[in-house]
Image 1 (cartoon, one colour):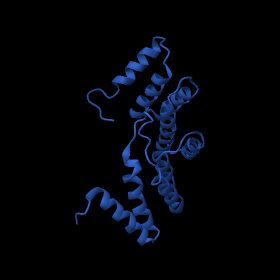
Image 2 (cartoon, rainbow, N blue to C red):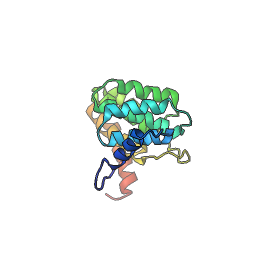
Image 3 (cartoon, rainbow, N blue to C red):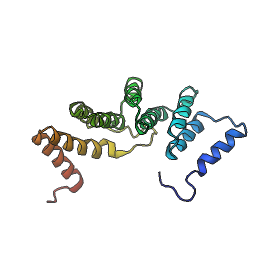
Image 4 (cartoon, one colour):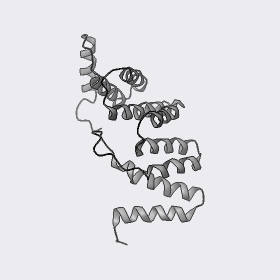
Length: 178
């Protein structure tokens, strides 16, 4: 998120409304939690995301993002609950490449390269659902998993696979240029 001026402006507005007794809708609750995340209040963000999940009339794409947000908060807090949240997302929602890449990233941090490779490989097999209404970061559908696979295969000594993904990236981003 790019900030201009007071990066806590939106957060302050939400807090003012809540202090004055305004009850947030599910959508507002979701965006309030995102503002907490963007401003570094990760524990409070987790608390508010949990409130969002208990609310009615949630947009499904926001639920997937809820899992990603929870996972990222736990990651930033160095809490192992991150992986549990991400696997819960796989159980309860249609998998997307961003979730699989986050799981791959977890295993990279844990130095479990074989598991990381597995999840990044799965991420390369999913196409984005552009009709879902969700915000989609297209980097997770090609660039992120392919770069990670180049690095991981190189680390485990599978240079052939590393080169395969390197060449796919080169073709995608540079075409036939040398």
